Image (cartoon, rainbow, N blue to C red; front, side, top):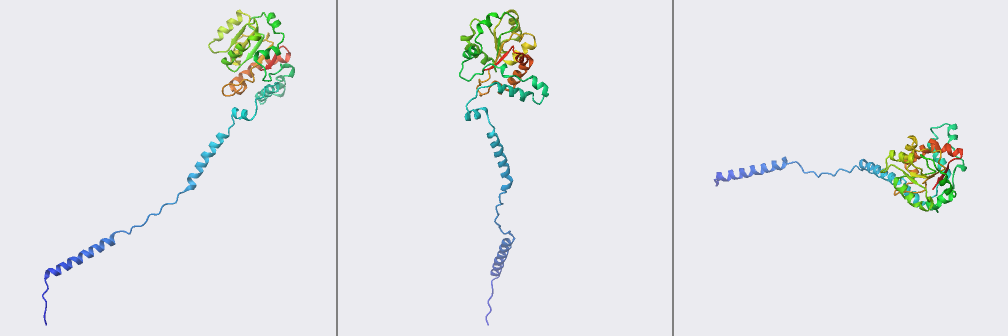
Length: 268
């Protein structure tokens, strides 16, 4: 029987190869299995209410009505005496007693015909005051005017002064607003001269009355520039500051004089 002599190097080579295979197997076993990551579901319920709330707020802001929106759906209506009566009731209703509210009420006889939006300022004044020439000549008192015209701003006052040329004749008109004119200058002019018409803002006229610079006892007409609208389409009574100052001026003495029959109110 023949025996083969094996080369020791072959045994070493096979053993080395076996070790390498074992090491590779261990490496493959030691690596963790790769798992596919699952995409987490989007939690829509967390973000949707915030978006909905924002859209609701925006919708509310859009729904807020402006004066221009109201005018688009309806034509402008001229002011009437009832509008002023309602304004006084709303302003004083929660602050005054029933007896005090009665003292603020004005009858229809206290009012001049209201402007129906067809008049210019001159034509309106001619209609409500046909005997103006006589009144103008008979007025001789200082610190007073026969007619007061109340506007929302100095610029509007200047516009009305220019537009009444056909009516005023030889009468003297005094600017009664704060822009570029100090109240001391206006008081001096009223003390030294005779003026027939005063045109200005309620705040300055109220201040002159309070400081005894202007007396209302000789006033026969008080015209409110009721229907005119500014660039934002606001009437004078739509501006809180102007509205409050006008009501304060009316309450100071005008309402009492109207009830006594010496002053007439007009809404232009």
